[in-house]
Image 1 (cartoon, rainbow, N blue to C red):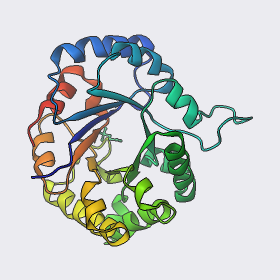
Image 2 (image 1 turned 180 degrees about the vertical axis):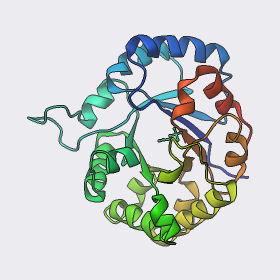
Image 3 (image 1 turned 90 degrees about the vertical axis):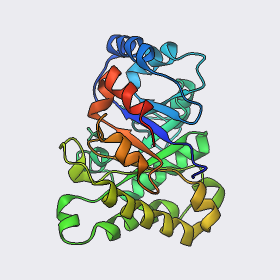
Length: 254
Ligand code: PGA
C-alpha cells in the first residue's frame, strides 16, 4: 500500500493545436471517470494551453503543464517561454529533460538542472525525465546513465525542493517504438532510483516522491505497469492523443 497517489500524465508533444485540443477535451471528459485517488496531468503544446485551460476550468482533478521551459524570467530569448509565463497561462507542472529535448535539441544535463531549479522557483512542479538509450542498456550502463542524469539535477537541491520533483523514467528505446519495458524491468529501475533518492534525502522523503514510467504505455499495458512496485504513475505520449484510450489508461487499476 503506497501513500503516493498515482499520476497519469499525457504528453501531447507537437500534436493538437487549440481547435484540436478543444475537441480532444470534449471527447475525453465524456469518457473519463474522475478518481480521487488519482491525479491527471496534460502537457499540450504551449499554444494550446489556453484552450485546454478553458476546457478543464474549475476541475481540481486535472492539471496542466508545459512541455519545456527556459530558466530566465524574461528577455531577448526568441522562441522561449519562462516559468512565470507558464504559470500565468495555467500550467502547474513543467516537463523537463524529456529525451527529445536532450537528443533532438541537444539539451545537456546541466541545462536540465537549471530548468528544474527555475521551475521550482516559479512554483511549477518539475516532471524530470531520465532514461538510457538502447546502446547504453545493451552495454549494461542503464543504471549508471540514469544515476548521472539524476545526480546532475539533485546535487543542487535540498530536501524540500527535491520532494517537489516528479521523476519520469523513460527508457529512450521504449519511446514511440511500441517496445515497452516489462513491468519487472520498470520495477527494477524504479527501485534503484528510489534507493538513490533515499541515499541522498533519507527513506522518508524518497518514499513520498513519485516515480512515473514512460515509453509506449497503452491502454492494454498500463495496468500491469501501474501494478509494478515503485511505479507511481505513467507518462504517456502517443496513446494520450486518443481521448477514449487515454481515459481508459486513467481508469486502469493499480
Ligand atoms: P510514447 O512517448 O508513449 O509515445 O512512447 C512517451 C513520452 O515520450 O513521454
